[in-house]
Image (cartoon, rainbow, N blue to C red; front, side, top):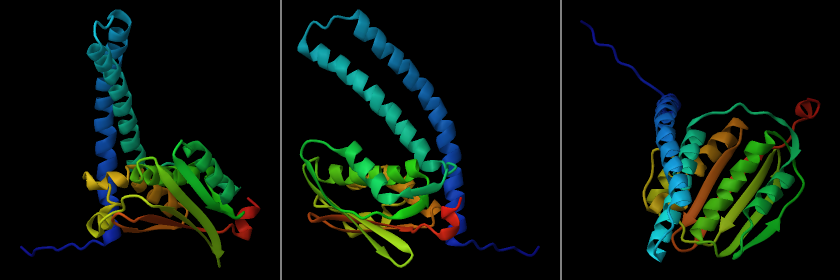
Length: 236
């Protein structure tokens, strides 16, 4: 019998991998949510019925409550980064979306340096804001919530290019090569954060791209390119 050979493009393989991951994440997260729900009920019951007899017991009860919340947040993040959501696009100002992301991300110890300009895009405002919120969070984590984040914008031809730079621990070339891989997770990759994969997904759905440059101990720059608002889109 003649053997058949099959060839697949890199995009086809990535699409299939993402499809399998999304299905697995959906099933696994459903089961995990049931477990987290049970742990949450136990944590609440203990907090209301047990009076800690020592500082250690109080710390353990507080830790249980915090870890349940953290686990639930991680489940939501996993679902978010493996599931393509329907975009609701409209004409909007990218500068305003970035300013909102900055406002939501402000904490003591972090200084923001901005060089922004008004730039119209045809986009889902909530999802694009999420992109920059995720990138800023990664930058804050890389600097351990202490330092300066520089955000600049410029319009080049039909594109708006936004750069977000931190001066934190940076990434090695090996980590940098795999930082968009949804299956990649190591202690070194924690600087990237779980939100980077979904950020790339959102930007690509807007016909844009993300590029990252980084150097250990010197920092990281994330460059987001999005198309400017086209005349046909402004009338929608």
